Image (cartoon, rainbow, N blue to C red):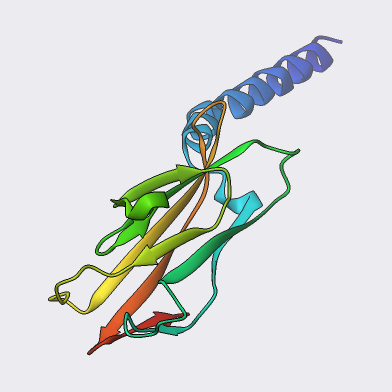
Length: 150
């Protein structure tokens, strides 16, 4: 009986040590974005754009967000490394936060020196601010044309 009690005691201690060993790892996982359960893409209306195109104002972009989370309220944070997002009344901004509506990117008036523009999009939980997913889209300037890279 004494051996049986010692065996059970050793099993309980081993279980406690193994269970407590993951606490730091679990805390680290909670601080990281929930990207493993979410997919975020930027959809565009055109693959090639020029300011000389009279029928197109810029490159329209829409987020496509798929997740296994239960119906999160999502805020989309858009950032442009160059160029601007065009708002109503021709107001231009570098950053915009919305609920998933289409945004319109337009180039700057002067030529971009590095020929590469990065549009960054983050999907965040609107109530907690936790980042759910992040993606980026590259636009390459080729003379008067702006080409969306996939």
